[in-house]
Amino acid sequence: MKRRFIAAAAAAALLVSSVMPAFSVHADDAVTDITFVLDWTPNTNHTGIYVALDKGYFEEAGLNVTVVQPPDDGAELLVGSGKAQFGVSFQDSMMPAVVGEDALPITAVAAVLQHNTSGIISRKGEGMDHPAGMEGKKYATWDLPIEKATLKQVVEDDGGNFDNVELIPSTVTDEVSALESNSVDAIWIFYGWAGIACELAGLETDYFAFADINPVFDYYTPVIIGNTDWMEENPDAAKAFLAAASKGYEYAVENPTEAAEILLNAAPELDSELAAASQEYMAEQYIADAPKWGYIDPERWNAFYRWLSDNGLTDMQIEDNTGFTNEYLPE
Image (cartoon, rainbow, N blue to C red; front, side, top):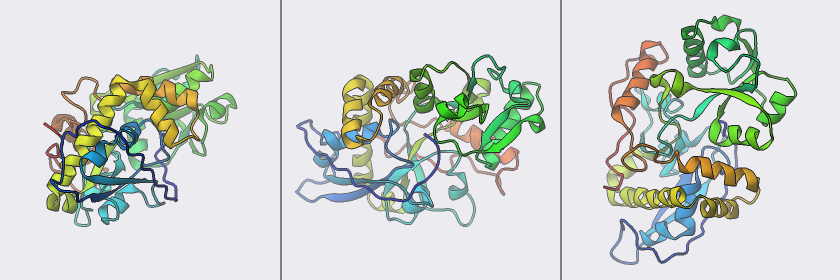
């Protein structure tokens, strides 16, 4: 689940069910059109959306939802321009879009997963089960400021010297092949997809999660973002969308096997074994220890943005509660 954007658009609308909606926009037969833009190709981060489509939760809430893949310049710009009402982003990568005079009208309205499940994977037994072990090793970097600052902190807090980590421009499209071929030694992954893929391939690995190293890195990734102006003008539709999405993710928590089948029906190009195994893992991550799906803890959100400010990763101090709201989530 890499944070890379691809050009193309693909609609997905599978609408059938008799389940009553949690929140409906209209009392009549009017329908609100909503475009939802992904961050990448379909995967288990998105399952709740596809379940809501398949089960008719959006339709019964008076919504006609179309899912599209992102353009080269990303989901944030598409949502910020109003060409899509909702999309998938990440707390770290959306920061430049919500800070400063040129901020886009986007707001994170739901946490897809409750905790940051990303970290560094490497071949087992090569000393990279902790950050300082990356010294002298080849790391596949995206060459992003937040990425490198995160690694620098965890490596040096562990007693290592980040300058001794060999940064290799990332061309990784298959983590298993990249590690098996020794082209790189360490890769930043989201465990729910790439980590599971390594397990299924029988590749023995070491792994450390950023959230386990330092609580400040337990930020929200991914999140659902909405166009702020559109939501303020259409609060009932925004709440209806998130109520239906919430039902989709709750279904995936309770029925991971069936949810994986729904995802595969929408995206048959996916590896079925990987999708099923990933869905089992994600079922425990969508809500985890939160009071409900989608909830964003202000303390955790603000702590990460303070860290960005304190480490010079933004041109200005980020005010608390910038870039997110819980107000559109169902009660």
